[in-house]
Every structure is written in structure tokens, then in C-alpha cells.
Amino acid sequence: MCYSAQIRADYAKLVRHYGATMSLEEFSRLYTFDPAKKRPKTPKAMDDGFRGARTDAGRDIVAMIQQWHAQEQTGLEAELQRQHERRTVAQAAVASKPTQKARNELRIAGNRIERAQSRLDDLQRSQQLPRDNRIFPGMYAPVLVAEDGRRMIKPMRYQCRLPDKPARNDVLYPGTYNARRDSLEGYWRGAFGHRHGVVVVQSFYEHVPRKGLPLQSADDESEVVLEFQPRPRRDLLVACLWAEWEGPEGRLLSFAAVTDEPPRDVAATGHDRGIVPIREAHLDAWLNPDPTDLAAQYRILDDREDIEYAWSEAA
Image (cartoon, rainbow, N blue to C red; front, side, top):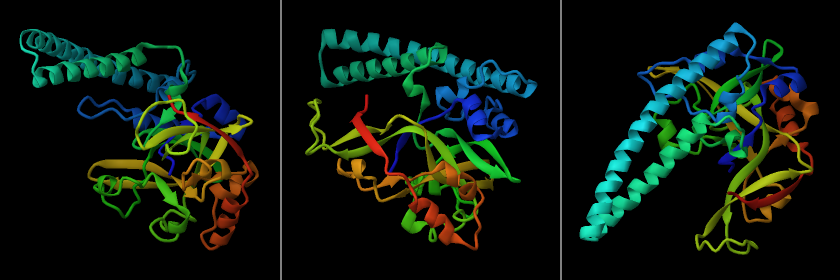
């Protein structure tokens, strides 16, 4: 299953190339600042995509993102101070009596300092890095859907919660960021044939068995994370299902990537599932499904290109 991907978060290109409209109302709802709540998990590229906004709605979103950044920065600075103090105490303890507990304290404090400083640097950095586009389950991504016959871009969480499922299912069934093809008319029947979307992806990541792979890494773990990139480099339209959920916790838009038998190059590494990129010629038919003709949707999933993938060990 696809647990991570490099998304396309260049809004101008998405709008221009796919003839789509940004749902600024949905993006504004996502980014609405509330100091009593946790900030939404969004990749840096998705936040930075609003820089230079020319409309009032876009500038309002930028202001809300900056509020979230300021709140997070304050929290990170406080965390750094706590962990620096913790490390100082641990260093003194190790120097006087090097117990395992003291060494553990020193290690934990160092790790947390590194993590907090890295995140703080990201908030303050303007230069784009490839990892800024990467999403994991629980993070938001721009999803291309159809609404009233128009292509729309909406922010959705990468882990789908169907309307008839409770919020606790996110924890009980953490794998619901992927929709297996053989379950589309089972668990996913409320979305399949009704609410389809695509995520524009530049590459994706999979956990694969290390055994048998010609890797330079000396890591002894049984699995390794590989990044798969299409050759030649291009965007992939990854088939997705999406849902709108409402409950005591509020309103949630979320999606899952459709998965099937892996393409040849992915299977060769030992992985047993793969995302399903659809042809751009099928985009409107996929985004506007006829629930009485599911066979047509299966034909779209079957009519895929024979894409060559190059893989490398993820950084």
C-alpha cells in the first residue's frame, strides 16, 4: 500500500493544466485559526502555495497560515528551552555518575532538540526542498474532484473516514488511507461510483523487504523504504475515493488512494500492492462516475499505462 507520496502542490499549474478551480472556501475552512485546536497537518509546499495570493480570500488564508506558524513557533521555542535544560541536567548526571538512566535522558533530550529545531527551521525557511511536498497518512493534500460539472481542487485528509463510520475508526482501522480494488464494492461501496477524485503525484514510497535488493545501506532491518519515480519524470493522476463526514468533532473531507496489483517494477522489489494512476483521457469519466455502471469505472482502472518506475532508497 502507498503510505507516502510526493504530491503536486503547485496550485497555479494544477489550475492551468487541469482547468480546475480552487475551492478557496474549503481551504479557508481548513486553515481557520483556532488557538484551542491542533493545527491541521499540511505539507509545507501546500502552505507555501498561497504565497503571493492576489485575491482577498487568498490573502486571508495566508494570514491564517501565519497565525498557525506563529503559534507553533512559540511552542517549539518553549520545547527547545525545556529540552536544553533537560540535556544540561543529564550531562551533569552522566559526568558524575554515568548510569543508563542518565544516558537515556541525554539521548532523548538530544533527539527532541534535533526534532524541534528541524521543524522550527522549516517554518522559517523560504527555499523549497523536495520533502516539502511529501504527505503521510493523516496529512492534507489538494485533491481534484468534480462539482456541478466543474473540476475543483479541495484540501482533504489522507485517510478516508466514510460518512457512516465513527471517528474512532481512524485508530481502529489505520489502513483506510488506501482503498483496495477488491473491497471497492464492500467496505468502500458508499464512495465507489459516487465520489471519485485524483491526487497529482510525482513519486510514491513503499516499505519493501530488504532481502535481495542491491542497496548500499548497511542497515540490518528487514524492511526498507523505497521511492518510486516514473520514467520519464511526469505527474501521475492517482485514482482516489473521497468522503464528507460530519459529527461532534466537526466536518471532515478525506480521501483514500485506490490500490491494486503492483506494476512490474514495484513488484520486482517484493511489494504486493500499488497505487493506480489513470490516463488523463479518462479524468472526467472518473471524476463523474455513474453509480449504475460500475463496470465502466473498473475499465478506467484497468486501462492504465505501462509505466516504467525507477526506485531508490528514500532519504
